[in-house]
Length: 411
Image 1 (tube, helix red, strand yellow):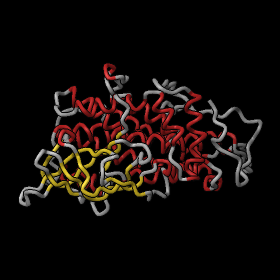
Image 2 (cartoon, helix red, strand yellow; image 1 turned 60 degrees about the vertical axis):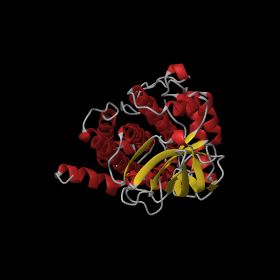
Image 3 (cartoon, one colour; image 1 turned 90 degrees about the horizontal axis):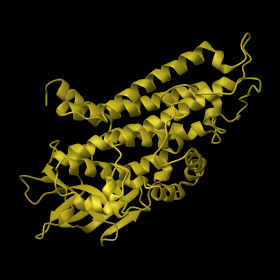
């Protein structure tokens, strides 16, 4: 397969019409590995890919893509077949997300914030964790879920919260505060949040619950105008004494990293799926560099194509090795094992995947050269999209601190 916009001739990057057809052979690339989606055809992916530049340029939500994802049943992919889903495992869904992100990064990243609710609820219910039937039923009915965990001034993620949850006599909560980076803002029906319950000041709790979009006291502030992944439309969500119904509280735990079973399952889905998205971005960037190097001409004596330069060969080799490592690591944590270190491995995979993805995209920029910084070049957008990876909670600092303290016997 060749892609027409993989390496456009911009800023004077000449192409050699006599060179062989450019191709990619790496088994981690959708152009070579023979992956067949359960939901999308090659033509579907090409439509997603063609829309991505416009969504980015206009800072517009991926509305047409989203309608196709819904129609294909993708938002129900991990649900059991009895609920209208396809029963995809975490491993299978991670592969789907990797390939979707390759063609449309912001589309994949945004829908990820619904899919991990669907996958984790399915998995947790199968393990006998109670209280999730309503969530599965609502997803099966077509409800769209968003993630409300980002907060300004909160550098500890799920361990604490700025948003407050005030318990009511009937077991419900009143939620007040602001969540940032809430992807799918134009379309979500319910948002999962964590908030702090200070009703017992000596024993504050973190409450994990859900709020309906049409509940009084909920509003969206359109704040999203960012460097990358612009089509996610991750606007702020503000809560002013908004009701979270009693049956929608799925977990409670003390302030700090002491998570109940369901939150562990949630992270076990969130982290590999997020990692897969950033892998897809990096793989796409590397393929652009490979395809371009095979046709780009050079004035150097004795060779005719950029791909024949030893420096380019070394750079491509380094990037391929990096992505092989990411692919293996992320795939391994889609088969979680018991034990505390298993959770830390998922954190480590997220950190390694997002950091390495950024390194690979930087290598691709070097290989492509000055053409890559043109707004007409796909790589310019990928360079921006990949920058957000290490900022997703838990961010780099939090991940390294968590792993380091355990490895040193301090936790």
